[in-house]
Image (cartoon, rainbow, N blue to C red; front, side):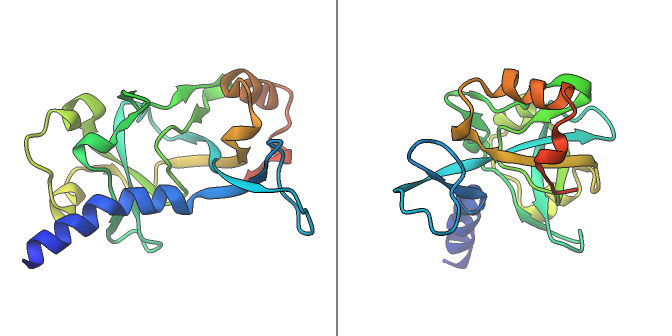
Length: 173
């Protein structure tokens, strides 16, 4: 019974993490401010980042602040966005646009998205820990508002990067 409860909890942790990484935006798609009386809707954060090596094909997991344990990892079927594998989009100057819901405490597994989707059984957090390639892979990470404020995120984020306007984004690392 305990294993079933643990399995259910671990299955929903990535969903809870993703939901916790959202911001409020106004119904017009702009960032909300205190005192704003517009109706708010939730939208995922828009995260861009650079890594020490090319981990764009590797599955991300989230680590504790002390980087001594995995706090969140996707289920085998949770590595898709809109029916396709959730690889990050490649941006200008070596940046990547997150499609999984990562944060500053991300680590990447030896498993590629393709390898991970083919697993017959979900590995435990302890087994996944042994598959970590780098527990501190991020060079730079920014939150550039929310996804809903962009009509063409890749093009618009590339413009922010190439125009030197990353200072307008929130630096996470």
